[in-house]
Picture 1 (cartoon, rainbow, N blue to C red):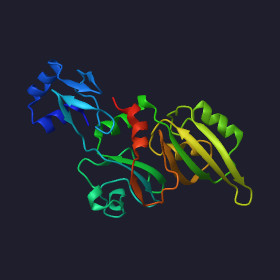
Picture 2 (picture 1 turned 60 degrees about the horizontal axis):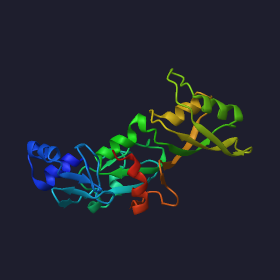
Picture 3 (picture 1 turned 180 degrees about the horizontal axis):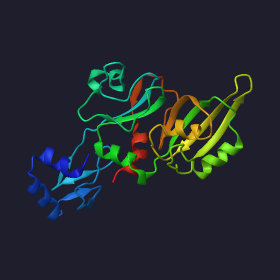
Picture 4 (picture 1 turned 30 degrees about the horizontal axis):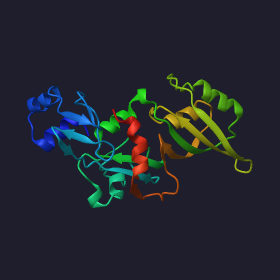
Length: 239
């Protein structure tokens, strides 16, 4: 949560009064005076004090395993949404997904009420790595690996940043390849378009990691709160 918003909400200050607290050097984070009123803070990660008073936040962070067929939206007239998968007590105000997964893509989706963290995780300068596992309808070759490392050019023109493509297996009977791909961008339908540019088609796609977070064995359709260790790993993305 932004530090200025936290102070205004918890101490019931006006905008002017909040600004004055910073000018008087009455605001500290982790024992150090700060003048950065837009700093993103969480009392699970930071010690926040204003004029000697400890402030607490109540942000939530969920790791959700999105199944195929579910849309990344609050509501949809035709399809089940990721919010439909949550229990009523989990649907707190300001809860949003960090980015989106296509309806036919499954896997890791971070959901949080910390809007500043959402912005920073999605900002291009942060280069947060997303890892996908995919099934491809043809034989993926070393030439494809090298092309991804150079930066794929979409059929309609835009060029992607270099990406790490790893061939996991190839099934000669079905002529299908199983691969893992790490990218640091979030272009629309990026993974599918990257393979299309190589003349191949993604027939199944699953996100297994985002930054320090890993999906591991979380069952599709279920979710859980981040562990203290996982939240600590996200601290690097707080600013």
